[in-house]
Amino acid sequence: MRHYKTLLSHPAVEAMTYWGLSDGGWLGAPGGFVRADGTPKPSYDALRSLVKGEWWLPPTTMVTDADGRVRFDGFLGEYEITAGGRSVTFTLDEPGDAEVAVSL
Image 1 (tube, rainbow, N blue to C red):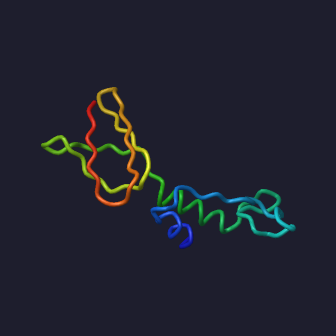
Image 2: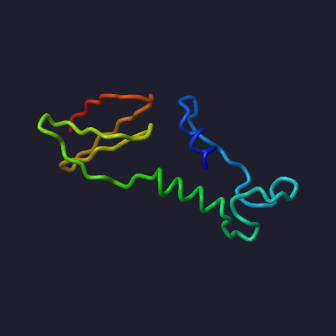
Image 3: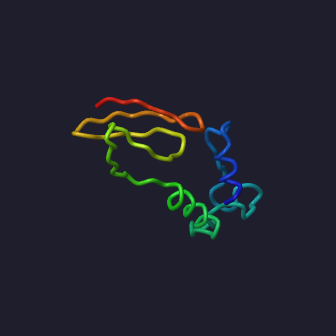
């Protein structure tokens, strides 16, 4: 999983494509994450654990401070804020500290 963490942490990487999810794709090689019969291999379980366990973020309830601010650490990408039945989205598209102002 170190490969995926290294690759996706680089600021020049926007996405990753994996061809051949199942075994047998290229010259019959067993290079996929699932066997030809569709059962998952240990590599599938490890990648799923990384993505859905370590990286996946469920909806999170946060409370603003006295100045109406919320501070958090997050991945680059799109975020949605919902309050009082209204929503707004914003994108973090550069690594490092960022300040984003939104109004609901």
